[in-house]
Picture 1: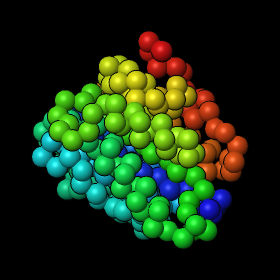
Picture 2: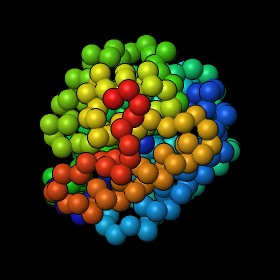
Picture 3: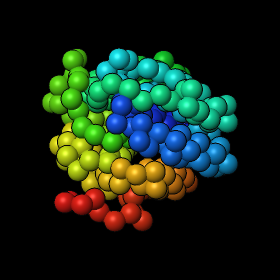
Picture 4: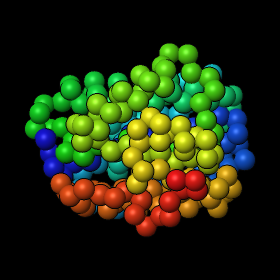
Length: 213
C-alpha cells in the first residue's frame, strides 16, 4: 500500500428534498474540493450521486483530486426519492473491486467513504440494511473509514445501526448554512486524516455530538 495515498468516495444525495439546499451543497462540495486540492499528499476521488431515477450514478471515478471539476447547477440536479442503501452497497462493492484491480504497492493507504444525505432510506430495491451493515463491518476491519452526514435524526440513527462509528456521525441543519458548515467540517477532518498516517483519527473531534447520541 501507498501510505501517502488517500482515496475518498463521496455518496451524495440528489433527491428532491435537497433542492432547498442545492446551491449550498454545490458550494460546499466545491470548497471541500479546493481544500483537498491544496492538501499535501496524493488523493483520488470518486463522486456518486443517487436518487430513485438513477440509484447509482458515478460522476467521477478514482480521479486525482487536482483534476476533479467543480459541481454546477447543471451537474447537480435534485429529484425523486432516496435509495440510500442501494447507493451505499453499490459504492462499497464498486470501490473494493477497483482497489483489488490495483497492484498491491499502488493501493491507497487510507480509504474514506463519505455519505451525505438530508433524509433516510425509502426507495432501495437491491440491498437490505443487514447486508450493508455487514459490508461496512468487513471494510472497517480492513481499515476503511466510514463517515455519515445527515440532516435528519432518524437518518443518523439509521447510520448508527449500520455500524458507522460514533465519531464519524454528523447531524447538520437542513439549511444552506447547515450544509455549508457540514462540508467545511468534513474538509477539516479529511485533511486531518490525510496528515495522520497510521494514527487513529477521532474524525469529527471538533464537532459536538449529534443530538440524541
